Image 1 (cartoon, rainbow, N blue to C red):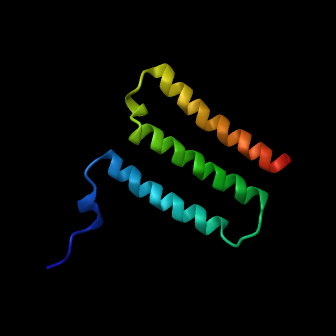
Image 2 (cartoon, rainbow, N blue to C red):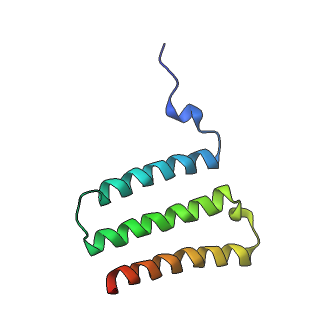
Length: 92
């Protein structure tokens, strides 16, 4: 009798987001650990971090169903944060 699959534990959007967050953490660690300080790689890792922030906000802080202006502000915040941190890394 085979054991339960990973998909058996996925019951909703939050569970899927949780699995994506774990995968994104592993990917960003694999990209950043002991691979030097390449500019492009750092910007990619910052992009992954911004996507993780967005997922946490939308699915665990329930901003996905928030009023349109609040959601637009949050989405803009994620993009602005990624752009600012990338610019600071690249130009300072």
